[in-house]
Image (cartoon, rainbow, N blue to C red; front, side):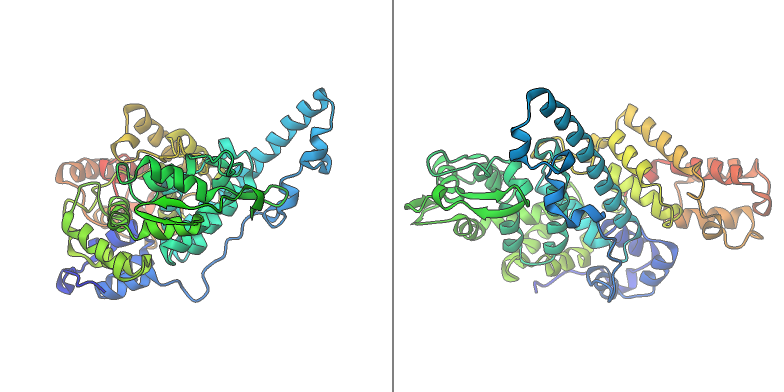
Length: 472
């Protein structure tokens, strides 16, 4: 492993432990934070990286086990049988199929949100979210719920393994094959969409390949298609181009796997991934020393993301003051963090999904193959108002707030209650001016022992309107 300028043990405290838990997951519960704070930095990072012995499975809906059924039209009609129907009947069947598919897709969103809120291994879900944005694929074009959830499971299963295995899995993934038009690509008419994006957006970045490379890659991926009756990968042999290709200075009878192997041998490939990992988990502010270290670790480890993330999470620059609370929460991060902070047992995932949709991050439906812009684009005057509306709506839901978890001892003073709340929501004190305003609000209320549910909601609404709550 690359030599890491690690965060010193003497500096490790509750705030740094919380920063790790927020960036490598979706925010710690008080008991999780207590546990991480008592560890060394190395132990805490390993606790985030190593899955528990029996992580909660949170399986997908029952229909996910039946890919054939998910691809059939109402009344069990296959696609071929559907095509034989009269025009007016086809239109009615298509509308019913689309309604059914939208319902299944929304169930899939609820299930994934539940995973994020309740998982005992949050880094797996956080990395799955990163991959969903990196290999952006939209149900709006795929038009089927099953392959979208199948791709989500692919990310989850291969997230920590060698990057080449994930790349090959994505290249053979039915949702991606449909989304970037490779499912119908043949040697007579090779489609260049996936060939271009696998280099420009997934592995190398713009300017690190030629038009000849795109054409040769497209020929190499020709014939990689799907069996659309079961949503599985298949090779359509008559469509395969077995001829010689020239790609990135090499010549041969390349197939898609050969193309991916050659791409990952380019120095830019590890650099590109290192930059993406730092931007997502660390900061949008460029840090050359960290990126170089991540780049080297990727190469030396054979693109192993577990060891590479360990380097990132132990690096002292990951805990720099301008990095902590230096990112704007995405809508998913905001909604999941709030649900985990208030009451992880709360189960209105329909509300969380609606909030993500309104705030601009609808799962399984990124705006383009580039994914979401993120960063400052998440916050506008209108979206900030929507964030406040969602927070208030969630707080008022029955069962959303676990008051016993927030205030296990109601005999505490206002100052003690304030400190508990700040620790629970921010993991450190607020700015002096914000803290003063919050204290004045508390003084206008009865003592904590007499707080009603409305008082608690009012207090939490004030807390979640603090600027720091929009940051992670």
